[in-house]
Length: 235
Image: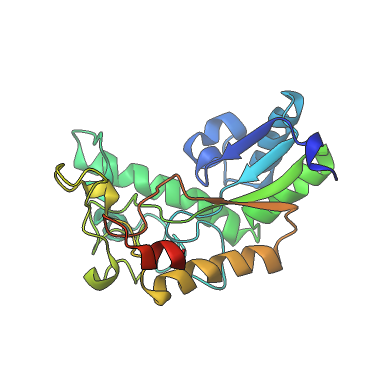
């Protein structure tokens, strides 16, 4: 397929359908492949011809066999599993239990699909084929959604929980104070580069994507500021 035919691209966050389950499965019940199919159907009917599927943040939000996932160690309704991520919420509900229940509800939807044997990424690609959309992967190269709770948030991979591999949060303007959402993984370390390459390799080898975007803009810090020429050459 010539790339000139890819005119209307839609980038779908790895939580897109999971944030609004009632929209995609209004009949309720366990989340199912029907929700994925309905989502892609709406895109096709709206003129989208290319779906960029974002399957990851810092960890995989799909049933990866190569890297940690959002469900590793999680049991349905496990508040203690999600509790360490509360600091990440910029608009927390006044009721702590409400926050915990909301995170568990989100996790449970992914668990519904896994328990039903549905890989939502593969299902989304399948739906694209049926609707004549071009499926691409959009890989986030340094997501920092867990930066406010580096050691406790399940959003974070094991590397990130080690301060050695984290950036300090320095901004491009060194006169500014460090900022928490600039505390990403440090690509100066080969372990960090290898970690992301492992995710990329799995998505290329195990899924039927037609193309791939490496998303360096959400979020973009990958080296300490100011960046050295050595690191520029490395990347």
